[in-house]
Image (cartoon, rainbow, N blue to C red; front, side, top):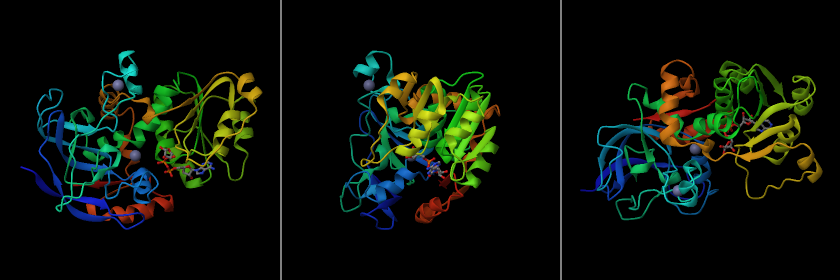
Length: 361
Ligand code: APR
Ligand code: ZN
Ligand code: ZN
């Protein structure tokens, strides 16, 4: 029987979000219904509401979530009712050319639930990033559920579903930060701070945090940055070179997604160093660099999709490290809120004092 639950819907471009009754179908083959316990508020949810992702309103927002599997459809063997899971937005297919070559974290054919959740009048909802978890329950592809240790608080576990995984993965997966490396992180919001945490975990000797907001730099220091640079007042390329014997950082992680910060990242790295772009640019942005510098400086210019994570490998591992006290995912939770507070949380994002507001149910 389809169920009716409450969920946060973005009805149209820039219209305030509303808590509405939504209809969740029973899980079909390969699908699961998950009872959501917590879901973080991410910038991407705001972008959906603003019409910045696509025009497929109404959206069911929320995509950074943890909860308990309630029911599964035919053929689902990896998760079962009662499992505590983190939702991911890239269920790997196992069959595309990336998967077949043993690189499932790049999967080029990720999938979501086939059935649609709807409003009571039958209007189909577009779930944010194929999840839609600002809701008491949601329908996903079973492959979007990754089982982890239920001892960890849902508001903490759910963070791995998006921004925190993107940042940690940018450092440990894409950037391959290693023991003794010098890392610079440009942009220290939730994603950049997670890159700081990932770099520290990987054994970076020096972690230079760069931001235009001193409050962000203070937080980055709490997260493990060893040096800070306010790039509003100081040239970050010069400052990073000064802090690295005149050479630049081994790995520079760009967690803003703008041409000027990318250019800073490009020139702030040492010869043969690595730039990781994890910040997401907008379609109008263009980058111009002397091709000779691209060649002459060597190294690698990489992009990080979702931290190049493989949920089945990375989520349980990071939860274990959190449980052991080797990373503190709880430090990313600024406040817990209710389903009705998402619009307020969007407003607070701009104030710059929130890493994550997390809806708890
Ligand atoms: N130079 C340095 N830092 C900057 C600059 C700049 N020119 N412009 C903005 N920042 C800082 C902000 O002060 C803030 O601390 O970048 C940080 C961005 O943080 P958030 O807005 O919290 O965004 P976050 O969730 O961390 O995401 C960062 O990664 O996944 C992508 O879409 C996401 O593009 C976004 C980026
Ligand atoms: Zn997100
Ligand atoms: Zn695939």
